[in-house]
Image 1: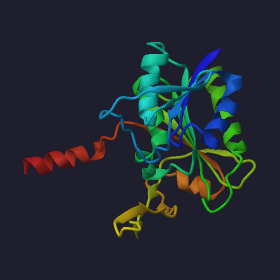
Image 2 (image 1 turned 60 degrees about the horizontal axis):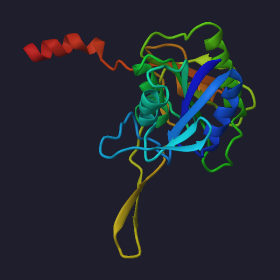
Image 3 (image 1 turned 135 degrees about the vertical axis):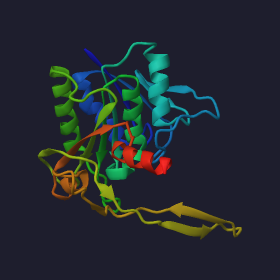
Length: 257
């Protein structure tokens, strides 16, 4: 049996995480290490300011007290797998999209990033949703994950080192074709809501942004946002190398001028 390590950023009780676990159990031995509380948009952060503790939830299922998804993968490899490596890491199923530049904010994507840094194939899975509507049943996400894992275990991971699969599932569809996409260009606003507590102290809640985007026209093909807009499952190969190679020559000339 293959060994699969699972994490997420919505916390160990998240419906998406539990749906992911159910979809993976037919494919191997599943070990879960998830944050004890929601860590959405924590990015690829590690906790260096205080100690972390594993708390058993059930067999092969742990919550990491106040840990991030990156902490979960890092410490699981050190303490649970003890130098061995799982065959695959899957992070999700996130409640909400992780497309375009949002990937840099995403704790879900960060769990997959941490895994590929350690040479372990990984998948990040997110369910695009309307937060004003009831929670989806995650069945399309489950079937998509099951299909990808079957293909990986039947042959090999399709990407080179330090790259992971970033999967986004369209909302309100029962079945969908899979499209290979690139990360689109998202437009960002600055939505923050000012409130005051009963003693008059000001505080802010950061708001949600609409999924407004533009394709990177020079790339060709579909971006992740376009795929979701047309009701497809989006599967994007994401790499950790953020070097702007095309700009190096011009930067060199600018420095020498």
